[in-house]
Image (cartoon, rainbow, N blue to C red; front, side, top):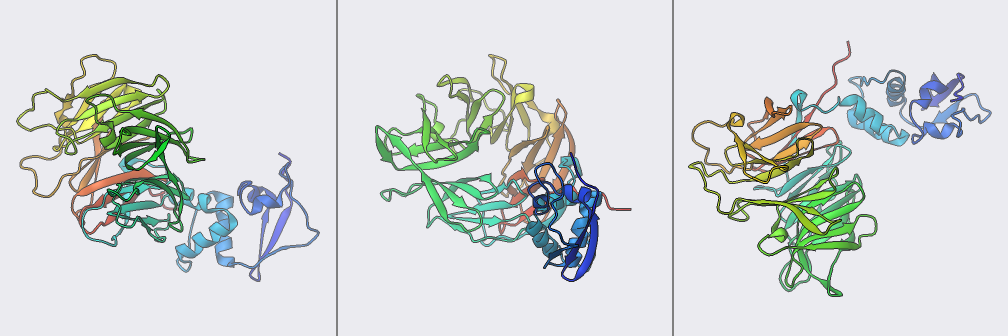
Amino acid sequence: MGIQKDRVKFNVGGRILETTATTLANAGRNSMFGAMFDENWSLLSDNSNEYFIDRNPDCFAVLLDLLRTGELYVPANIPEKLLYREALFYGLLNHVRSAKRGQFDGNRLRLCGSVTGQAPGDGTAIRAGPDGGCCVAHGSIVHVYDWMLDEHPPINLDYQRVNDVGWIDSENIVLGACERLGRGDGGMGLFSSSTGELRYKFQVSHESQIKSYTAGALSFSSDYKIFSSCKGRSNEYGIGVWDQVTGKQIDFYYEPLGWPLGDADKLQWLQGSSCLLVATLFPRKDNCYISLLDFRQKQMVWSWSDIGAPLTIDEKRVRDAIAMEESNSICVVNEYEDLGFIDLRSTATSIRWSSRSRLMKGKMPDEPCYPKLALHEGQLFSSMNDSISVFCGPDCVLTSRLRRSYGGSICDFSIGGDRLFALHSEENVFDIWETTSPPLL
């Protein structure tokens, strides 16, 4: 690539450090050091013997060693937040994150910390950000944390209850909220994750009129679309679609007779089939409704409901659902953490319950139960009371459990940025689980 092997000398805060152009090239084009090379990755010369940088020399030495070896060693005398600040200045924050945390693996996760929220009681949702931060919705407030777990200014919806929240990228968060009758507010908005500022609102138009609505569950596609379940006071019940970039409404799927799409608790975009899974679950409705919507054909291409299905003595009501595209099935979970599977290729859409997945024995505890499901890199995660179970392989074999006794039941969890965040019902405390890198020998 034309990289020169010349030595490069830096004077950082009065301390002289030397390296090579090859080492600096490991920083990548988007780093500060990338600006020192031309388009052919040849070192640009400024006719001086050294480059002066008025920054912390100890942190510079650590980051330089990271570029040399790909390994991160932080001496005890350097606070981690100081190193992160310097890495941000040089454009090396992604390098530090990659070196600090190993590749995400549910069976190798370790608890690395817990954060106590600002308000007691149940939180609505926790969502992991793409860079390893997270946000926690509680009532009308969303608390936002960066990847160093420093809290940013909260997003305040002025008494509108937050139903769901999602990250578009590390700088932008979408919130879905309830409409307050007669106020014309609610709906969905895009907010700055760092300042909490409202950037724009997503509107629903029906018969050429702008309508007020309640936004429920959210989902995002790789081609920059936002999906949300919507409930309005006229006929705008169903699933709305907006463009992430422009904020304009581009489609709306009105709910067919008997199917409460506007009440959906769970939306999931399926990249392989270009369909949207829509699930309305117990206890929001007495019966569960799961469907797949194809917006290209403008129709529901698959559906299942437990209407008329006889309940067992255990009352196996579906509490969460997630599509597993590789196995052409939908996984569901009930209050007892029985996993169930619905075959998308079969016309007989009954649930095949897997009792071997049950982890809780005997009488259920008196505290609330919030079973949730998530998929990540081929592993299935299922929360139950105060623990999260990890299942692997085509047969979903239980391989490990994540458990922390402090905080009560897990009411929600989310995976992103190589971290798993678990939100507990008591005091809104949330745990951070990471796959730690092996120690240096």
